Image (cartoon, rainbow, N blue to C red; front, side, top):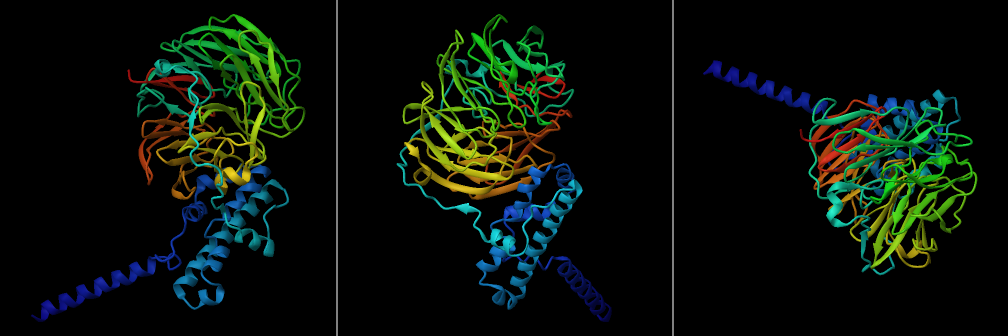
Length: 550
């Protein structure tokens, strides 16, 4: 009996010691009553994330000027202090005080990381200090619903091909709807450099344009490294055999490019009879699908920062192109697709921008809508006449617009704004048509995706966000590896996001992150994928891949 009591006592002491140890290891600064928001938790995790630290070490000054503002989360220590009734009240509650101090420590460590990054560049820091920083952190990161317009607006993507051709065409950047949505195709879940590769072809030179597909033909552009030789290539979509290649007119001068841009970054557009390519200073050129040049339109040399990269679209008999410039006149033109004759030209402000125009059906009428510098604008595609404008995007707008739940969505800038709004109306509709706005969290380059009431966004720095499309509120957030430039695909309930090193994350749409598969081509990749014939086509830095079931 005595021995039994001793054993019980020893066991009790062991259990008590374990509990004390477990409690001591639980961070006092993360009480259950005051959990961190998704944004702040990701920020905290990034403090010790070597992958993120490497991304920061390679940022340019413009990146850092927006990246440090990630610290202004909805529950940063200044807003948390005000939400909880001030420091006096916080100091009276140990758990509340620990939560406040945790938030302050995260902010201080993160801003120190940003200061160090500026110092490494030998550039003056743009991080605010003292009262200016506190005032900045106190600002709400989102705007409430301002909608005063008619909610009965009906919006759908404009389909540029017949429904019977959906499964065998990908005629423009982001596909038949311009939304990255895969229709009438079942694509593989697994692949690799030597797995489920139907064919692959080495692509000489340089270029970041996406493939476009019309039935048996796949079209792709490329350029020589010096930009003097620029070509359109046509491949057999089933075998990868090169059918023909045609040079576009040589440019008189070459553009000054950002290091991630190329002389062949604009994606071609095809209607099955012709394929039209925009190649900056080489102008706009139309070829028949058998490779015969039909017409060519030269342009004045592009002087815009980073060089041109927008993609043309086809609407009925028009080829429409928007290429904004901060130096030189912005270009907003439409040509007859058969003859190349100018149909209309409209002025646009001098501002940097690389987004391509997108077509939408709005209450039964087609509108051309463009995500531009500081403004989204709606136009009549037949004439180019401006219908309305809405303020909100950042100065540099690259991603294309998308639609869902009878709204349009705009993202822009480095850690820039995310907007939901209604198209339509006349003049400035900012005060009447805005649904919601998040001031930060948007990507600089990748376009977003919409599915089943949710908005999916991958930032250039690898933060995957899922937002409630009706409110803009965060549903979940996940840190992915690497940087992102390519725009995603939506295949049924699955989303495909590919990073710059060729790794594709496949996950299921839902109210939590539900990973399905990760595939890696192990090659540098900025171009967005194309889908047709139940296959995915990737353009890496050196190779064109066809991925499908053998």
